[in-house]
Length: 338
Image (cartoon, rainbow, N blue to C red; front, side, top):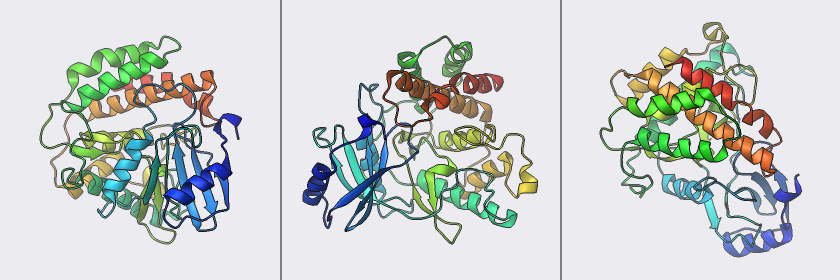
């Protein structure tokens, strides 16, 4: 483990014993290999297994690595139809391990890193996608007022706001000129769909590998990685999920580009969008390419941030340079849609 991501285990054990009901040491700590943004650790204690998510050390971009927002949304969703880990405690004191962190339950189950689902028989693959889409629809149907999240996002047009945020994040992390990003930054703002209706809770990184499925059933046990969650247009999650499936079948984010989905028993993009609309009772989606182009733009900005952290030496994941190199290609795929 990179020395900058280590901490005093005895000090953390004492802190959790005092602040998490039922927690008992001693404790062993293992860092998960994933987690480009917020380092994530498995805590193995006498009282059971827990998961710790923390901000990375070093200088951070403004509003990034918001583990306190993750903790808030996990707490708010407890008891809803959206399956999440149990949030135990948020520590805002950086003196404990060097940065803000929270602790949640460890949820055992299956994580599918490859959306082609090679570990499953063809007949068992579509039910996984249906469970995923049902979970996404349940998330977007959450009444944010009832769960205390009515102030979880800023007012105004969601996409206009997001384009502004990610443009500023991209510029702050920019290391070279990417003409495709400049083209998207120029094109996207004038094509934003109008804001209509009450905003939904948006996950922001809804990929198949951010879900834990039950060990023996096509059902989602927990949705992970809520750092980018906010209030906004739910179609952003749907488009982001479909955008990820458009990526090549190799790389940090594994996609399905070039694969025969029908022969693999996987739904195509049209079927995914239609199923989502049916689950939520909404009409067919207009301006689909805008949502996809926005998704490529935003992921390119995120990748550029990872690249900047890698160059600064405070990236969480060993593959940060590979992720950062995706920025140009992602922006190019977005431009191809406009």
